[in-house]
Image (tube, rainbow, N blue to C red):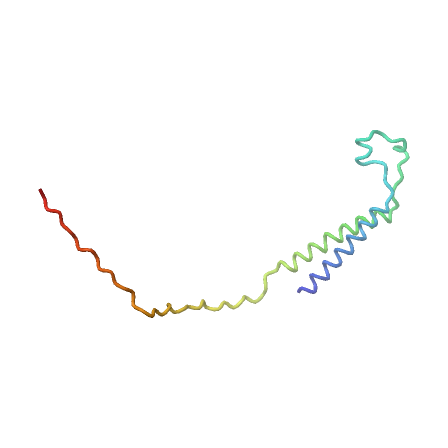
Amino acid sequence: MDSIFILLMVLVMIASILLVIIVMAQNPKGGGLSSTFGGASSAQFGVQRTNDFMEKATWTLGGTIIVLILISVVITGKPSQTAPVQQPAKKEAPAKQDAPASQTSTPAKTTVPAK
């Protein structure tokens, strides 16, 4: 079970690194946050499209990462088929006393005479 989990985590790391490389290699499309807050750019009408391979690779790697993580959660989240054997709790004997406890005498009740 642990070897499958480790294999899935290694695949998730490889897919994540590839996703970062592909996203960094893409040309900016000209939209996004920079044009929203920075005003309109001169190339707004002539936006370059990312080639289809890079876009498909981005979506595929993102989906692959999600699927691998879900599979790892399902595999590691299953309860085991065999119930663990519970051992009875050990009862310890009370500690042996060397000397008997000294008994204190209770004080005698004193009665107060009525007036």
